[in-house]
Image (cartoon, rainbow, N blue to C red; front, side):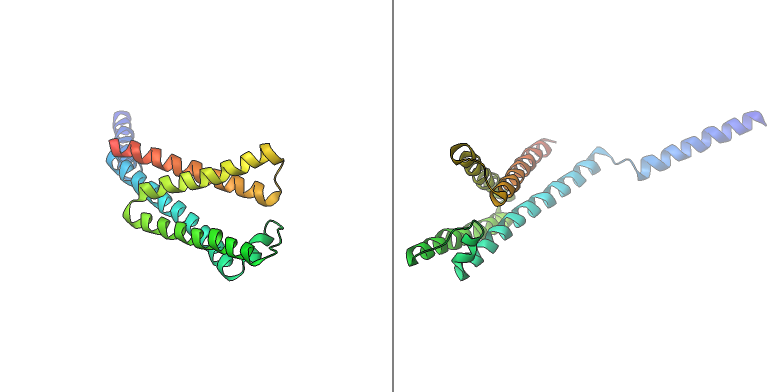
Length: 167
C-alpha cells in the first residue's frame, strides 16, 4: 500500500506538471507572438497619443490662438502674432498629426522613430531653456517629462521591435 501511495503521489505530480506546462507556460513561439502583439499595441498607442495631443493643440490654435498662448501666460498683441500661432501650432501641428496617422498605417516603425525624434527635441528644447533662462514653470516641467517619457518609450519600442525581428 505504501508503494501504491508513492506511485499515486508521483503520478499526481506529473499530472500537475503537465497541467501547468500546458496552460501557464507558453512556448517560446507563443511568448514571441504575444510580445510582438504587445509591442505593436504599445506602438499604436504611443503614435495615436502623440498625434491626438498635437491635433488638440492644432485645433485650439486655429480656433483661438490666444487660448494656446494663455497656457504659457503670453498675450498676443497683433495680427501677425495671431497668424504665427495659427501657422506654427495650427498648420504645422496639423501637418505633424496627419503625418503620424499616415505613418501609423504605412510604416509603424517610422512612426515610432518620428515620435522619438519629435518628442526628444521638444524635451531637449525645454532642457536647453532650463540651462539658458532658468527653471521652467509647472506647464513646461510637466511637458518636459511627458515628452521625455514619450521619446524614451518610442525608442524602447524601436529597440524591442528590432530584437524581436531577429528571433
